[in-house]
Length: 217
Image (cartoon, rainbow, N blue to C red; front, side, top):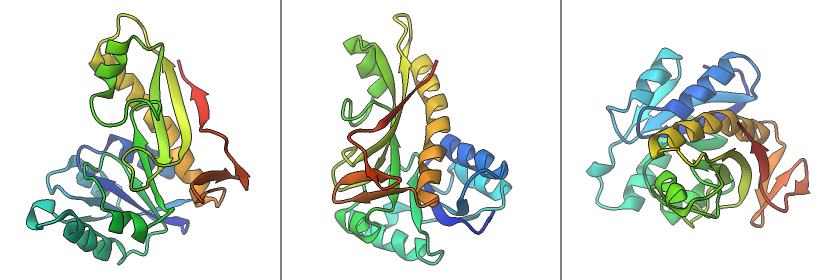
């Protein structure tokens, strides 16, 4: 799949629901992204099938074959660089990136985290939100740095948490939000509107004081 836009590699480890949102949005013709490659560290990842069905190139390297995180990351980068990606989109890529990898693609890696960062970094965010009794929950698109889930925040999708919600229901609602906001932020980058400079997010050459927040029902 190519539209001569910003060459983008999407990295996955699993089913690829966020990947599918990019595929669908790109098929509508409204994005400046060229979905050039889908990479996975797991050969059984269903996201690879989604990519093949959409005529997107795929590649896979299993991390178990390497002794260290950096050795794996260097092999991944060597493979990715065959496609010369301008943007990397982490979409359920269940690997902590080495400092070397982050530096190699500095300012060109996006991630999405299922929480309103800086709250609830790490895992089990939905359960933790419910246990805390928070009024709001959501997801955050951010640039990737060496700090886990700590990179400059770009865009947040926010929902109200119903008192009777269970973790699975909340996860499903947050995933719907992710499918909306992640392609938007990536497309800003592809259009040249979004960048990261000196630890700050710039949108249309204006530094953001904090992430843009969109509310969803």
